[in-house]
Each structure stands twice: as structure tokens, then as C-alpha cells.
Length: 122
Image 1 (tube, rainbow, N blue to C red):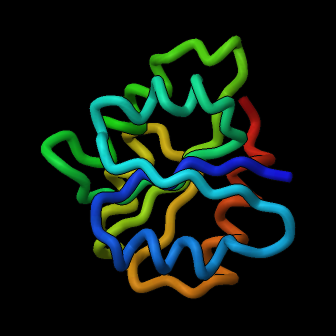
Image 2: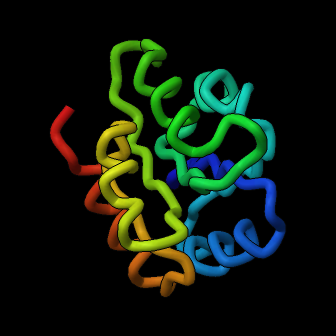
Image 3: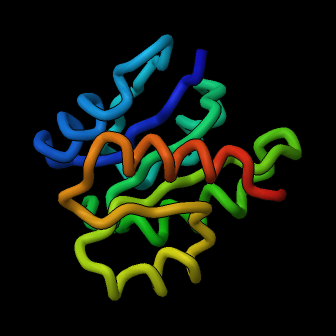
């Protein structure tokens, strides 16, 4: 089973992620506060994070950077960012995301990005 933290404040984004990842034995944990997302990832012992680029006042880039700066018991936590446009891939890479998809995304596209991110070198 994979425990995945979904960091998004828009209901439609969370619904799309749930639709794509509610397969097998995934446990999806919704979170809408970017300021506490990194600590929640640690506290809930998640296996990966899916974060929306546009969330609250902090944004997906800052959330990803905070996760990267957090020790998390020495393990790299895979992060997939949900982007608004193709040009945002540069931002996702600079923030340290392991993968990304552009909204609207297909279920297979998100699952593939998450699988690739989970196998990315630390």
C-alpha cells in the first residue's frame, strides 16, 4: 500500500487526483494547508506527495522546497507537482519536484509520473 499526501485546496483538483490514484491499495490523504504540508508528510509517514502548483499563499514550489529541506528520516520523499501549463516544468524542476503533469491530466499520466518519481535516484 502507498500512502500519498495530496496537497491542494481546490476540490476539483483533489477529485481528479483521487480519481486517478484510487486504485489498488493506495491511501490518499487530503491536505489544504501549504504551510504545514511538509510536517504532515512526516507525521503521517507518507510514501509520496502530489502537490498543486497553485495552493494558498505559499504555492507548490515553496511546498516542494520545504519538503526537500526537511530531513524526513534521511529518505527522499517523491514529489509530483500538478502544473497549470507546460512552461511551468522549469519551475517544477527548480523546486526539486521528481515529476510533474500539466492540468488537466489523465489518470495514467499521473500514475506514471508518480511511479517514475518513486524510482528517481535520491
